Length: 223
Length: 339
Image 1 (cartoon, each protein chain N blue to C red):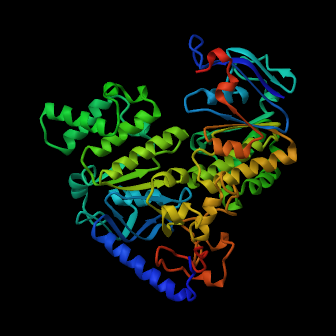
Image 2 (tube, rainbow over the protein chains, first blue to last red):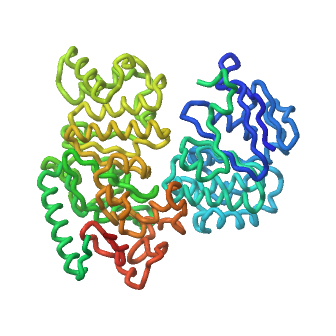
Image 3 (cartoon, rainbow over the protein chains, first blue to last red):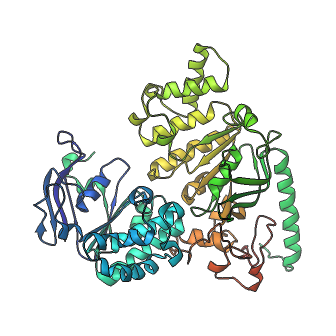
């Protein structure tokens, strides 16, 4: 279970972005979180991805409450969650070739030896050719770079995947291709998915269930 | 409806009818693009074929949506029309508006008579387009000052009128860009594009990253400006936005326009005829949600013949040659229009 229990979070304790949000994703389940821009859904995605510490409330990952969280959440918990952001240009290190981008999580966790094999597995899964893997971000299109960012999120075989507006910048065909790659990964690993977005048609088609942003919030916080 | 028995005859008739339509278009066209080609020369002798042989007309009151995957050359086409290509670009063909060939005009002509006056640009991300340290009013007035020689009071009035035309609320004029929502920033940018009274509007991905309500609103506002007698070239990968406001849809693949079709046919039950256009539509979540296999080719290493052939389910040996663009289509074996 990936569980957010009455979480309050934001960038200023006196003015949190949202208060008391609750949301649960079961293993193997895909949940779409739907909300307008500026509602706070990306902040919630960052909390769920263990990248942003909530001000209050509980975050529980497979029964383990994430407690010891000062500057960063503990690594063994963080690596259980993969995340893909909206803008591949700002998410990817411009100095790294796509192959290094995908392998970096393994290097960072001291598993350099596995890198080559894992990249060779992931590249075809997200539709990247060997030629593209040698290029750096400025030499590929947004769609190709987002494919690499998805692969990178899957490198450590996360049990949970958070996709925050993963396809908002992409054309219809690339969108369908990336969603298919996510679903193939989930079928083979049983990973859970939280897909955050504003496209109802897409989320309804993609996910087992779609939650409206206001349904995560306690009734009195509803607009 | 009776299907004609001799398809080649009806095909010819169709061609003639289409030619007649496009000839009519050419006369009252706000923008006339003929065989527009853009090449970038890279170091090491490589050439990027960004746009090849684009050919279309755009009439007053008409919206043409240019759709295609990212990196297919859509934005390069827009930059070419504004004379904003980088120095290593080589162009050929013509793009005429109001008797001026945008490709041949020198920088002075472009700066003094074209940008803002004949061609207005509605940018992709208004937040990045607006100056962060100045209010919306001051930016509007600056543009008024640059485009028209008027006194201070007239300037203020012109800026307020432009804001009103773009449905930008007067009460927000003294705000800075960071104090505006995405929708209002988009309107402020649109107001800037409208100031010079340009008859041709270029909107380059005006809806990217906006949520659906805002996409619909932005699209509807662009449509309203089109209905006021402007011509709108809407460059987008958002097929829903194109369906909402476009009169015609041009599909671009690997630098070439492969099909131009009326929007009602493109999005209607008949559908487009080019296999790529059909694939693009079928990738939508409200349709089959299946991607087109493979990825678009590199514009610096295009295959011989039809660039889509390696991904095309209908490809045959015919596709080793580039199909000519006739009657709004460039394909050797298009899907037949269904009656």
